[in-house]
Image (tube, rainbow, N blue to C red):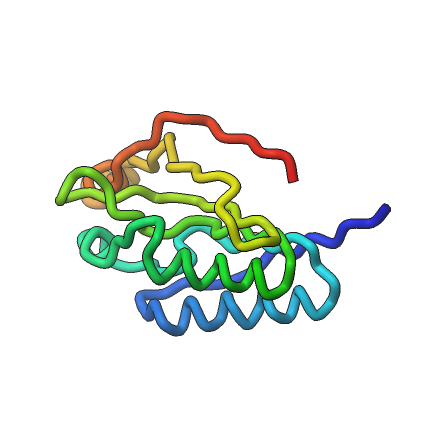
Length: 144
């Protein structure tokens, strides 16, 4: 039995509409080639200032997830939304959340990034994902 999987290569930017349109077009293309599973990268919907990620964060039942659920349902395939900015419990932070949709468009699994990227490159350059992202706490695995 063969099972075609597509890795959607996307360079996300701060233009959320363009990111989502590009991801959808690539998933559509993969489905046209017969892919049964397509996975998008981390920060599929938005890659930009961290405070803006928090401001744009949506719930799991918001428009970003609804769009990917519809793609999965329409093409009868598994779709992994590599991650998007999910509204969290704290006003100043969101979650970096991956969602797996089944061929019926239903949510099969939700994973919130556990190990956040905090690094001091130099005294002048510091990246602290934990300042605006709340860490998850559960490892997630699901059969497809």
